[in-house]
Length: 178
Image (cartoon, rainbow, N blue to C red; front, side):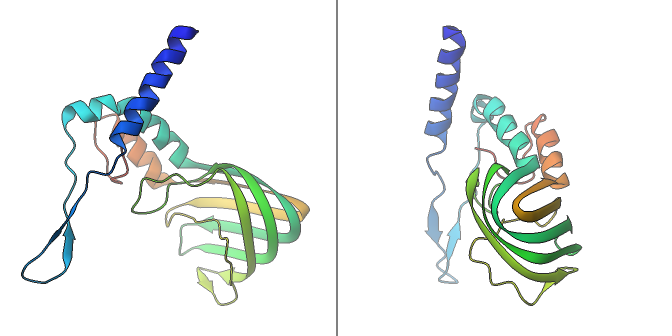
C-alpha cells in the first residue's frame, strides 16, 4: 500500500512539474501581432505523462452531475447545433464536469453553481442570460432534467473518446495533453 502511495505521489509531482507553461509568445515583426509558438513535446515527456494523460482523457469523455436547487427544466443535446432546452434552474452541482475548457488544459470544477433559464431549440437561444452555464463541448451529447429541487445530467463526448483512443498511440488530436 505504501509503495503504491509513493508511486502515485511521484506521478503527481512529475505532472505538476510538467504543467508549468512552456509556451512563449514571440513578436511577428511583419504583422505586429504576437504569435504563439507551438509547444513540441519530446518522446520522454510523452512517456512520462502517458498514464496521467490517459486518466485525464477518460474524465474528459463523460459528464455526470447531480444538482440540488429550485427549478424545472429539461435538456437534450446532440452536438451544439442539435440541442434543446426549456425551463429554468438555479442549482449547485457535483460530479464529473465533462470535457476541459477549450484551448486550455484546465479541468472544470467538479462542483459549482449552475444557473440556466430560457427556451432553446436547435441551438438558437434567444432567452438565456446565464452567468453560470454548464460549459458544453461543441460535440457533446447530453440529457438532463431538473424537477423541483433535484436534478441530474449525463453526457458523453465522441471527440474526446477519439482523443482518448489516439492517446494510446501517443497522438493528441485535441492538443490537451500535459
